[in-house]
Length: 366
Image (cartoon, rainbow, N blue to C red; front, side, top):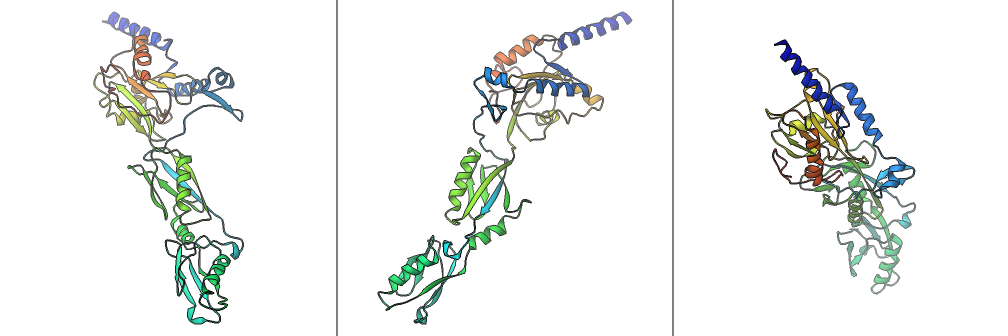
């Protein structure tokens, strides 16, 4: 009995040793020290000037090496902050009349024609004798000149004046609306599940599928219809719809949207836990996000949970691929070759913000 136990221990030791030394596996993680080593290995594979020169998909920007990536496309759950910059006219003469401004039209020698008028949504005002006159986007001096010319057909030397009674109405309305953010004139705006996003005054706009730059241009274009002296800058505060992939011996394999703070335990929760056949001691993780070449490591989830080691530092990255094997990976060559050449990396590109609809279940030919 003792000899059989010794033989079993020896075999387990040999399997573990061979697996740790496997040429395709960078390291095995089953302790806090291993987590530190994983971070060092990840840093070692970070982009450097030499790697940028070797690969045309990388470039150096102001001394920093970065991968050339397509513009990020917004998706449901992303959190934006809209920062509003209002340029006030330095002189009343340069102020452009806006919709919902209220004007005083004063006839000093013909007070019966004096009136207080509201600029309608079409930018016009209605006045006695002359009817509808375009007022929006004009200064008070320009409107005064136009009205004196029109009224001169009915009144000799009308000498009327135009003054602002209520103005910047839309700006005041906007100020009351932008109160959700702590940094002054700004508003926090999430992208809704239907891909739309809401802004004060202009309402809902389609955001999903647009880049931040494209949405910012659209927002500023819409605001010019109501406020002429406003500039909006959009900031992407949080990305909520990055995707990670898990397959193998889990109850619900597939692609899952991950949050910024999700760790490796979260992906197991999304996948509804392990199957009875799962080898929790040798979970393979393939990482490519932001690296010049994929990083492969093994996580001993079973040991780390049993010994109470925290896995909070094992954060998920966009496009991470987690593979939970069945039994011991004593043939790691075949497993890793299958994943890299015929498996998930044959169909999933090395970039974030991706999504696929492939069957990632056990026994899949993908």
